[in-house]
Length: 387
Image (cartoon, rainbow, N blue to C red; front, side, top):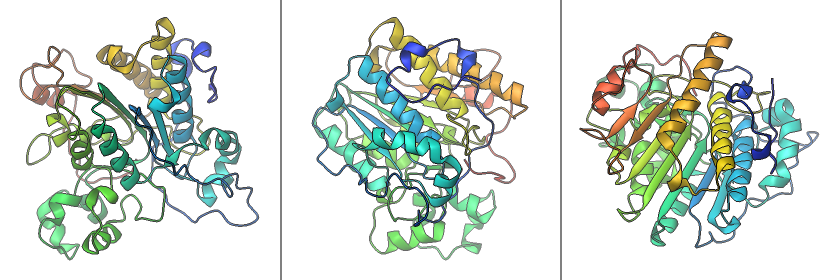
């Protein structure tokens, strides 16, 4: 297997798509202890970037997990690709979470290699990422591109309680009015800092009751849509989510379509459908299945011609990435993760809420038809894994 290390040479070393085969392992959430003395910690004297966000920022690259190195590797690699494509360093902001003790033990070599390339990256915590998106919106840029690679969960309260029916949640939590609607959402972990971790539902509720805003505690379809919604309607918004269950950021929820699909001129690519895990997120994997394949396809596109995000063929890229991911899953005997694509950009949308595509026998005429025609129900009887 060929694993491209995160360097500025990544694009030039792009080869056949199937060269992006990576080691197996379903994504999972695992917050453990912080690094201790006796462990070689390259981040011990390396603070997060704290300076003001450059006014020219249009690209946000976020590595949210703190337990494996591959999320950060994908961000470092992708930043090099965009720089080589002609974006300025002041147009790109990066974010990461410092590794836990277990991460340094299991992925220490890769973390040590990545550390110097993360020196100017901000903390990947919900408050910082959402706050920076809102700052970017104030500049009214022509486009914003957001890439997030991390662990993900299905609706976190139902996942924590082990139930499908949200009406059963009051049996498992002491809830106040409105908390199910705010917190029982798909979520992607942004694990920098000391706030509650992904899936720590009781801690999230307590922090919110103590005054913390939801977007300071978690990244969900609602919070991401709220931040992107601050952008001018004419600004293009391109979002790529590499995480388990990330299709839940665009697929239909019980009470209606995801709020992210209602943001004007938004295009979203996700690593999975709403009810599926992704793979390659374990220790020892240099890239995730989806993130590695996505970066390779991006490199091939940018190698043909230096282009900005708005000039790329995102639907075609989705199909190519999906093919690679599906091939790797077949080779490794994994169940399909079913990557998703959605766009409501004028001239590209289909009837209904836009276009949401996964694997199917033909192109759907609506997001609803496409989501339902992918080979299985969006829900499962129990959430058996985490992303």
